[in-house]
Figure 1 (cartoon, rainbow, N blue to C red):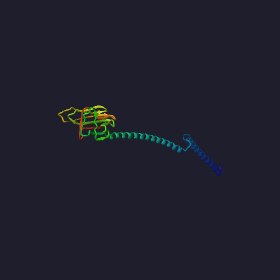
Figure 2: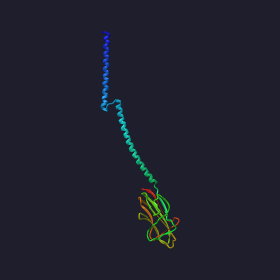
Figure 3: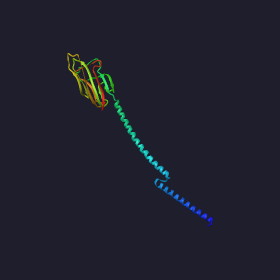
Figure 4: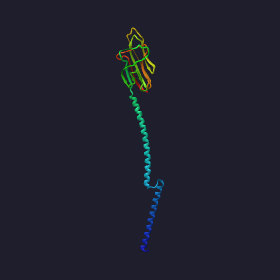
Length: 224
């Protein structure tokens, strides 16, 4: 065969092979593009993967934000509960007041609420020196006591009341041979907010004070 003809035939065969390989590669690329377009829309394969990963990250971020919202709500609840506990711990109720004056009160023909005007301590301001009444500012267990001094030639009868109900009493009979008497009593009471505690001098009896001999005290033991 003529060398020139042989060379021409060889070149033609080589070109055909290269063209066939190129066409196969183009078909493969078009097939992958169609798959990507079918599943993810019109995009390049790397971009499709990037969008898919971004969608996953976005969902994780949304879940994290929701969890943070729940944690923030719980934190506020815990802060409020802690503040309530602190307020309870800070609540102090303590009072001490003397009858005041220099002399006796009574005998009077009717029961009389004693007004202890000489306030010594009144932490929490629950005791009212204008009325002689203690009003519970918080629910809890309280301790109260009273002490009195009186002349021996008169009847002594003093009681502590809760909302009009007599709780404890201290009394002594008249005695011509006894120049003076002293008495006292104490009680622990569970009170609700607004419950009132006061001391009454019973009718036809008397009490005496000078230099804080006759006194009314109380304080909060525990909130409930």
